Image (cartoon, rainbow, N blue to C red; front, top):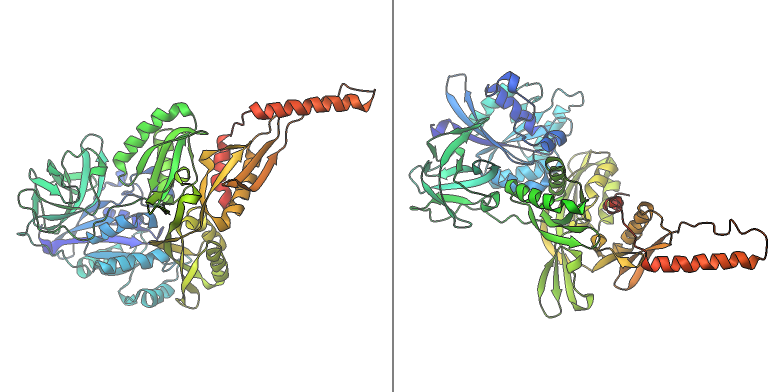
Length: 600
């Protein structure tokens, strides 16, 4: 294909602004799918993606399009995930394009991730085409959104294309804009091979299918290639382009997007952002922008039935084949048995992994409270990275603790400004900036600990703003924190699965909430059960579950009061003995209730 007739573009937007629906319309316009085979969210392969209306995995597809002059164009669409958890995948997909369609909801307007994605596209020198979607909605505010495009984004509102992806309005004009406004790729065919990996997926029969954009040079089937990041070599068994199904081809030239299969066994052998080059004639330098993806949220996963551990181990192994960013190691708990300590890119990633394990592998799971990775510097100068509360050293040995901080950008209607500021302050946030985007909308910039955002910040932000506020954030640095380990004791015995690393200032409130929740969930026993929240040896919160009492004096009628007292004393001694040897079984609902305790 002539390079001048190739266009590489992506669709970037805030969550739920219609990326997947627009991709569907482009595919339909090109008649790539028979009407009887078509289904909504065609590029979203997982049920979770379809139900939640989000893209978790980025996808690519090559769309053939013939313009009004009869010229055939090859349009390579690289779909991108919309959630902040997957921002690195978004950046690699953007780096594989020359242009971007910046999709904006006509009812919601410019949101936090609209801004951050646009800045990301500008960093990679992409040509940005503003597109206003959902113009058919009764609540559409097209003129107001055009003003936001000019004021907030600094783009020409007159170039904005008005569409309704759902009804197919304006799609022809959008196709024309892609051809005329987005430049063709500029790669050197004669240079040594440089191809960027922007994604990969696993096929049970063929191994890993690697998604690449050839930046310079040519790649042909049968050639020997090398990866820069792990210096591994493979032979290209098959090369091809993305249609609805994989379409093999003999060669990929500079500027083209496609895939290769090389007998690679696991997705973790492939690093998103890595550079592929020829083994015999390698390029001098890898393409810029590669970095290792590191998890930021940690949680332990246990099966509800301890006999399901082997099934969970097999499920984790199979899931890892498809998800290179999932990191896990074996873990065990006195209360929950054997499981796995896992690292995730964010809370959405955690939820997706949990749902996939439960649905695809039919497992019932319990997850411990999510935590972040802390840096602990000991008195002897040793530096440790700790994500599991049980690894926290003796407080007397700790010199300094540091926790990750984020810079959060919140865009909210001015009516809810006070509520949002109160929430951010409650989460130990420090205001960096506050500016009015227009008369009705405010952008707040806050620096706050990542640990405070994990539990319920996003839900409460939507609640206090009636769903209108939007959030985007970046991890910026580690800062010093007064960190303590909060332990929960049930009947005097610590429950390791309920331990948390928390900021000392909020430890007491968290301990009270957890104890209160556990009191509601743990069934009453024949003896009194104390539930205590402790830091070291100090009890900072307590709730008591009263004992089930049998009326031992029911048959004792008449006679001296000392007879009843004697029976009661005997019962009291029996309950003391029972408490010493009694074992309190914690129901699984108790562990789940602790995770939800932050929401109240």
